[in-house]
Image 1 (tube, rainbow, N blue to C red):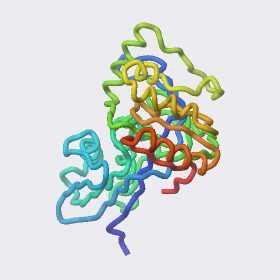
Image 2: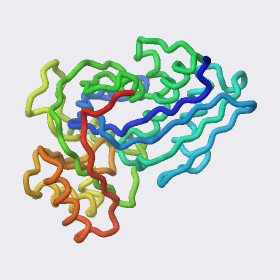
Image 3: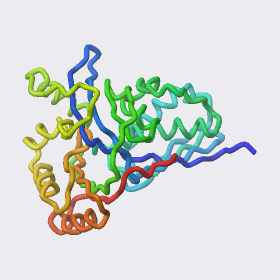
Image 4: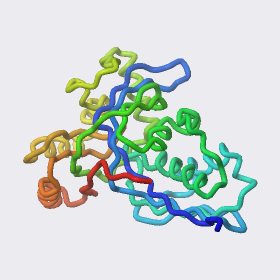
Length: 281
């Protein structure tokens, strides 16, 4: 029997390290990053229909024509489905937007996976092909722990330990484009260290956006200080271009305890405790 409906989980990603190597002639930036996925999901429901409908729900429902909405329309157009195929697409948004968690790219990748499972498209197994849609989309299609290079389109297998993560996001959100514009000025000033090599070691850990953000945003500066001093914390930093910060722990009870104390000290912040190495789409 032909399947006519499917729900795909679209996970959040965490950059355990993120370094900007240089700006390319085409305006993009070469990066180097270690990425893992956690059990915080948007849900992308795709159903065959008699007209084309795209709807959003959930805590972080975007405005129409916001970036999260535009990338879905862009994906359908890229796949030549915008005027030819009638679908009802419902996306339940649980991942904060403008947070550095990759929700837009994750939604686009989930849409591509779902359309293939419904036999509406045949997905190109060379995930780099989809970098034309967005630099993060190849790693979301890959869906496993990875080292990414280039603009994000070069994806390599990378072992990452099991962690329990405390995610913390202030009300402020950061536009990825604006953050890259800011870091471009630093690149021109020669302030970004070149980390390019094929070996991941302790020197890789860190996020080149942090130095910019902590000078401009005292709230994030305080969040990062709080997380770094938390008991049993292994790693703490910003993910992506922000504004979400995270701390990693070996046990969930450690993360839960810090979250409880955090809520008392920073009551207006969004927070979530999750784990990596659980994804199976």
